[in-house]
Length: 114
Image (tube, rainbow, N blue to C red; front, side):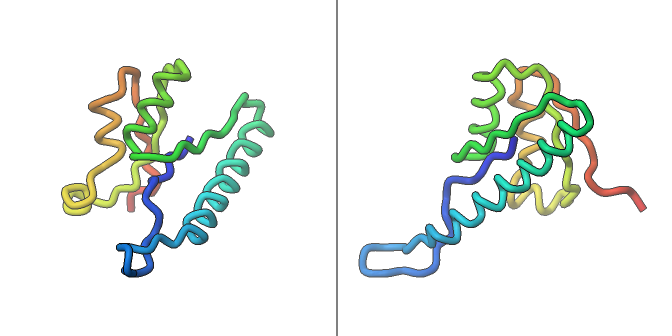
């Protein structure tokens, strides 16, 4: 599962306010879905029963809703390791899931330590 932020990229300000670039946003969603499909295919080749889900909306809220609505018993997330400063400014999806999910959350580092 990958949650897509519901806010499209904005390209400017017009007479009615900000102008979203919906075409670019749709391209991002299509690319995200292709990546999820490739992961599912790879897992199925290894004998894992898998399916993809790409909810749109506020990321953490969308993930929590999907976890609860689908009876998910374990969440495995990758930690990008952006660092403390990035997390203070942008927040951390992983940290929010650790605090809000009512099921175990396994955090797997996506980068190997040097």
